[in-house]
Structure formats: C-alpha cells, structure tokens
Length: 476
Image 1 (cartoon, rainbow, N blue to C red):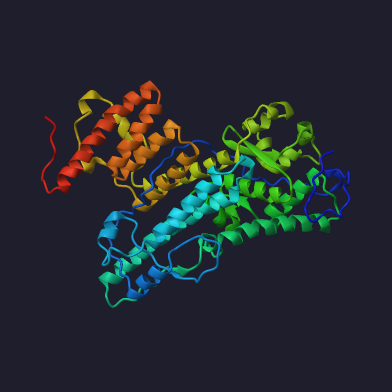
Image 2 (cartoon, rainbow, N blue to C red):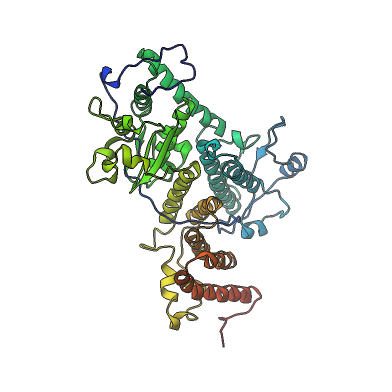
C-alpha cells in the first residue's frame, strides 16, 4: 500500500481506501502526451537586436544611477525607476550620452547569473528548482523584449518630436520582484504553493486519507478541472512556452504542464519522476513498487491517471510500458527537464525567426559549402538569409543557456554557431564552430571545415569594409 505524508494533513488517518471507492477517477492528461523530442542550441553573452535607434536620457536619471547602482542584495534599499539603455553596440553608439548606464543589461546579466547558479551550483540535482530556473529564463527574455519595445518607442519619439509615447519602464527593487505577466517571480512561486494548498483542501473536503492514488486524483482534479489546465496542441504562441504564462492562462506546452505537476507534488512531499519515451515525456510517482502503478482500478491505472490518453493509444510507445520496462527507462534529471524546455524555446523562436525562409534549417548553409568548387565562391554578406532579429536573438539566448547545461554537446554548439552566422556575428560563429570541430566526429568536422574557412573570409571582408575600403575582398 503506497501512502503519502502531506504537509498540513497530519491529522488525517492514513487510510487504506482504494481509489475504486471513489465515484470518479480523473484521467486528465498531463501534457506528457505527444511531446516531440529533438532540436538544437548554443553560447554567446552579447545581446543585440540589430536596430540602430537613439535613446534620450534626462539628467535626473543619470544622477539617480550614480547614487543607486542596480543590485540584487537582500538588504532593503530605495526603489528606483528602471529605464532602458541599448544593449546593442550599434544602438549604444548612437545614444546622445554614451556613458548612460545599461539598466536592462544589468537585468539580463543578473537573470542569467541566477539561472546559472540555480542549475550549476547545487550540490544535488534534486535541489534544483525547476520553477525558479524557468522563471529566470522568462525574466531574461521578458527584459530583452521590454528593452526592444522601449527602443522602438524612443525611436518613434525622436522621429516625432511632438508625439507622446508611453514607456514600458517600471519601478522595482530586484529580480525576484520583476513583473512577469502581472506578478513577480516570488508571486508565481507562491502560485504553485497555492495550487498545492488547493489539493490539500480537496483531500480534506472529500474526507479521504493520503493514499497515493487519492493524492494523484486530487492533484488532477485541481489542475485539470478546477484550474482548467490544458495542453496546447500546436506550439505557435511563445507564451505557451514560458512558465509564468502557462500558470496564468492555464494553457501550455506538454513539458511545462509536467513541470507544474512535478512542482505541485513536490510541495505535497510526493516525488514525481519522468522519462522520454518516443515523442512523449512521461511522469509517475517515484516508488519501489512499480507494479502498483499499473494496477487497473475504475478503468485506469495510476500511471494512466497521471499521463492521460497517451498510455492508452496503441500507436504510442507509452502504451507498451509495464512495471518491468518502466524500470529500464532512464530517469530524466532536473537539468534534463530544463533542457527540454529550452529546446522547445529554440525551436519555437527559430521557426518564428525564419518564417519568411520556408524550410530553412540551422545546417542549410553547410550543404552548399561542402562542395570543393563552392568553398571560396559566393563570399558575400548578401547571401545570408534575412531573419527576424528579435526572434533569432531569443533563440540564441535559449541556446546559450542550454550549452551551460551541455557544454560538450557538439551538435548543440554547431547549431549555436550557425545561428550566430545567421545573426552576422562572424567572429563569434567562427569561435563556436571551431570549438565544435574539436568535439565533433571526423566526418562532421570535415563538413564544417570549409564553412569555417568561408566565415574567416566573411570576417575579413567585414573588417575590410569597416576600414572604408570598397568592393569585395578577393582571394588570390
């Protein structure tokens, strides 16, 4: 008999009630259904939108910065207006006062550092907070997009001197209180606490104990009936791939709904583990008695209650699982789960960035350069496809984080280098692809070598033109 010790419910008897005693068994899917695996990723610390805009700062803002340097220290200090300044080199160079503080750059750096600390400096993988790590991802991306909105607004204001343009700048003390979809990071974490409390109330209201099946059923009732969480069938809206947006709207990707399920159960002292099976990410309660997970009660097993319809679909590999095969699955670590969420972001933002270049892949240019006759030909910036700059940068930012998790994955680094190439950051692309060649199999390195040679020439040509020379650089 599997029982769970729930915080706040210690007064309840540990009953032996079977889930068959309950009139209904919830078989709501936790998004584990149909989660496609795969994708590619990266590393680079420079954020650049690519717009050449001017930003105007007033003297009060400058004086305020001199007195109050942005910090995440815990000691209390005065709130200040966080106003943007360009991250992009081109934008920074055109500001009226180039010594202006880079407020948003500080925010981006702090969010990245917090993410890195959460995933890298924990003694054990189980101590990593999935929710915190993914909220730091959202905070960094939101700060970047807010920066771009502010750049656009100020550029419009400069063009129309008499126009009054609303600003997105807001006041807050440190990263944990930064507004994300109307709430701070701390408030979104409290939202998960509130969901766990609702599960406890559900258990009390039904006068049931803490049997594992009953707890899971209560979790499903709260998440999928009371709260109305559901999986997005197709990931088109980027909001469905950010944790705070999913918590707010109740709609999201499969992996993020799984994260919410895991985080809620963790607050109930119930450990949920997961693994990739084919195109699905399946989760189940950690137990030393896997046979009990597959006992059918009221038409459903515990494994089916948690994962929903995918385990009943004969076309799914999940339908073939049993207690023996479950033991053979590789349990995903918290870092693995965060990596899947980041891979989702890369694919989503890349798809949006390359919308006007149907079928364009990270490695598309490699196919054309691999032929000997084309190795040095067509060295021209105009051959690089034009992509949407903000979405491309968001994909690069996601790949940076994924490379922190998997620094020796040559395929991820290759794709990261290719995205830098599309972003026309040739020096950084050469560096990343050169590192990739050191880790890649020999046949892959042979494909990359002529392309890296091409990038060297593109970098030289860019330097040539920056010195005022005209025409194309030719190789004797």
